[in-house]
Amino acid sequence: MSWSGNRQRAFTLVEVLATVAIIVILAGILIPTIGSAIRKAEEVRAKSEVMAIESAWKQYFLEYGKWPVDASTNLMGGGVTYDADETTSAGIEMLEPVVDLLTGNAVTNMPYQSGIHNPKAQSYMEIPGDSLSQTGAFIDPWGSPYKFLLDTNYDNKIDDVGPSVDAIVRKTVIVWSRGLDGIDSNITDRVDDIRSWSE
Image (tube, rainbow, N blue to C red; front, side, top):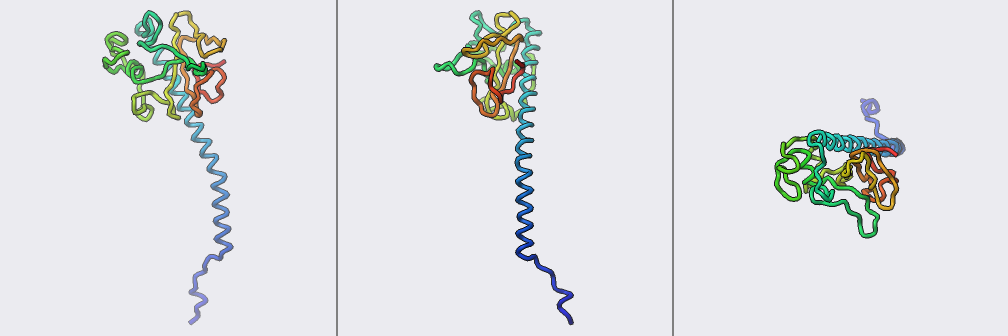
């Protein structure tokens, strides 16, 4: 009986190393591509959500004919503020009271009161559960709350988009995400921000 016909051929060390090298090369090619695809998907999601927020505010205005601001143009009791070093852009974050306002949730927490700011309890947008933080803020794919500004003096423009910036945006609502870096300063020149307007 001959053993030569029944012996199984084993991989040599060279063949194993060659196989591992091919796998490493393929992984080196695919991993950056996958990372780039994930980043692009996050940007597309952020752009879609930015536009949904803008649309929701426009629907709110069509319903009530005014923004939910008080006589001093503070949105629901919260003003537009800057950091002490004046590097933080203007804007109001999409925190829980604002989310409740736009989704029609009947809550009575200050500063938002459903009977005053959305007495019809209209829902202007739906927010996926994975886009809400544990505190109820509407967050972008990178974990920062979206921000917005409204034309509170009703002149069809927003000219307070950041400290020391002479920018005027001719829209009644602007919305933005701070992008991957999460940095919130001088939003007119942030290259990774996702915005509802263009220069």
